[in-house]
Amino acid sequence: MPVSTPGIVVAGLCKRYGRTVALDGMSFTVRPGVVTGFVGPNGAGKSTTMRVILGLDAVEEGTALIGGKPYRSLRHPMTHVGSLLDAAALHPGRSGRGHLLWLAHSQGLAVRRVDQVIEQVGLAPAARRKAGGYSLGMRQRLGIAAALLGDPPVVMLDEPFNGMDPDGIIWMRGFLRSLATEGRAVLVSSHLMSEVQDTADRLVVVGGGRAVADAAVADLIAAASGNRVTLRTTAGTDTIRALTRAGATVVATGRDTVTFAGLPADRIVRLLGESAVPFSEVSAHRATLEEVYLELTRDAVEFRAATPTEAAR
Image (cartoon, rainbow, N blue to C red; front, top):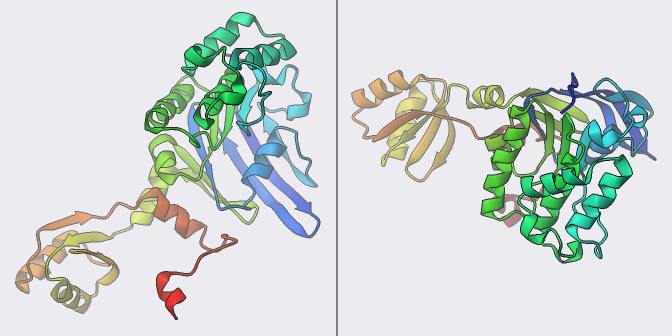
């Protein structure tokens, strides 16, 4: 695998489609050895950004560089960056292996590399079947095999978990991590926050055509978790009364649980003991990546359904 540092640098991308602003100063970096999640609501600019990186769309301002160079200047680009934007982009009459052979020939790559990537993505049993009969999960594997043909230092995948069964999802998590372990810069777009949380080291959250957050996943979750404490109790009303009197704020309630902010766990335990309020568990609240995402993109969602309470009014 050729060495390339940094992986992807996106700086100040601006693009309009008529009066619609698609990109509004999009900037972020994808580093070698790191899986970077790329998330945001529909229309936030993710697909446009990936197309710009690959030289498929032009911008009015800004640059997108792969290994320090624009895509259009790369000789044999598949040896620099491998990408999967659309798993359906294949000739249905060709076999999976035939599809990869055609791509390899176009890039001057050896035939043996085709068989290597077929094995790598677990597609060997179906390699000689017509790709038009593949399931979505199999097409995803074929697209990933195509992305790896040139053994590139940079890999970009758009929604690779789509169509994967549970075994495929588990495989994908480990596979993406292995790519980063090999030193590749990996950019993964996904709507599945649980999979991003289990896979990505870093997260770029986009909204309104720009990056609204670019940080380590662990740091984002820690910041969102704050000093909240979750309490398990069968006396929710008494618990809320006792702790709000002491200055705590109720953040969320659930069946037999209440989450508070504003007081440390040891003081909560002491207050409840003094008030003779029963409880069975006190734990520091750990936010999910979904909570982080919803908070960061709150103002960037184009369509939002009414809550059940709002709908009933």
